[in-house]
Length: 64
Image (tube, rainbow, N blue to C red; front, top):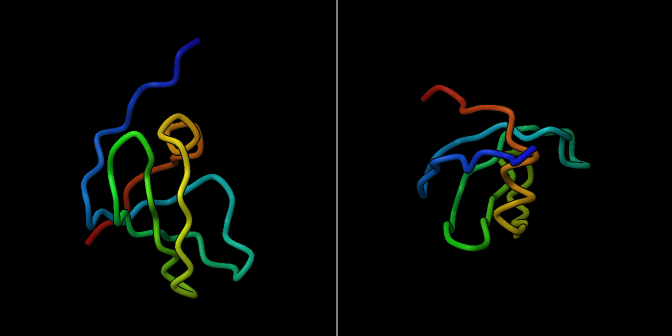
């Protein structure tokens, strides 16, 4: 079964499936395209992942 493409934009705060090793589970989207770049809200580490991987790990938007 295909994973749906999540409509995200720069600045969105999202929750992903697994928390970052620092313990935070909140991420800010900083780049959108074929790859997605997210910044950890806990330690400011940036992670880049393929769009397909992001869509698979996505669990929801955070209010704000």
